[in-house]
Length: 460
Image 1 (cartoon, rainbow, N blue to C red):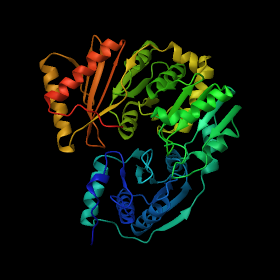
Image 2 (image 1 turned 180 degrees about the vertical axis):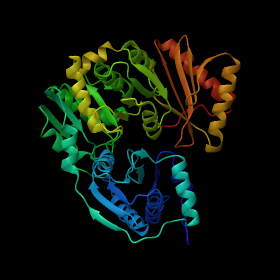
Image 3 (image 1 turned 30 degrees about the horizontal axis):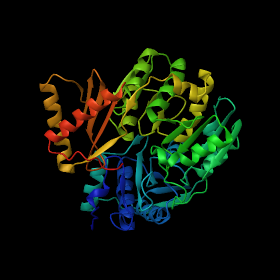
């Protein structure tokens, strides 16, 4: 049987992603369908949900993917255009055996790819590598499958709002012309309070700004709206709706770990002593706050698939990443859903009896770097981290090696880890003073220099 060889750069740790027409083609989408359909069939399943985001290339890639699933003998349940969490919801709601989302997430418009879910667990890492190996051999199931359409939008919106108990607030929302637009409009029509939505028309060219709320420049429209309307807060979504960003009434960004701090405080009132998971890039203030509230803070590896797997292992009701992925297993399904996280944020403000600006004011005063990224070849990046860890241990440093090297000093902490998705090293540092932060970043520079790594960071 004739196989298919993927460009090796598109088989990532958490998904399959490439540049359409250069590293990602219709034939790749067909092969993903054949390969994933084979995995589902051999696991005893057959029915697979398929969704797509609003990128210009998504319809054609979706068609090719569905053809591959059908060739593998699967029933493709097409849910159409919408956010990635709606695809996850469809798998749960319809009792399906897996799901594939055609999405480029927050990447530039010429990117696209596939996020996969096998039954109720993420499909990532070794799963994706094995899919590539099987495709090269042509090790695929054969069958006569089918495809049908199923509209889950009404059920998804109803479930999002089913147990909402938040206050009536004045909120701005920015969908960034991503895949969340229609669902957000439906939700806002039923929410109490006053709501103003921006850029809800789905447009894969992203004409207003790039849909990545972790980049502050992309929040400019939302910040203007909140100031002009004198709103309580603003909420933004990435291109496929699994990452959230927020600003308070004064226009200040509330970063992912700060959102998690607020959500954790509200949740721990309902679930005393619960485990709260955050990735290694999160502020120490978050872990300290969870502990002070009687919760069990757990630092874990960066990566939405890795966090979801750890939640299952530990039974944690809440987890989050600096990147804005927020995961609720309490009253939800355990997957990262920015729309649901937004509703829980509104609930938390009501439960805590404070505005987002007031909660921001109460947070410890720290200074930190953004995420810094340094070029490093894929074949070298993990070796660099091992070299750094060896030196730190020899020096008796306080180091956590959960994911790279996170080092605690009298000045605060610094992190150096290898990216799982790009040929870069990722660094971050946090201190209570600017002088302390300078000393921490100087140590990162020193460690990079000892490994022969260029210290000029690349843009995120």
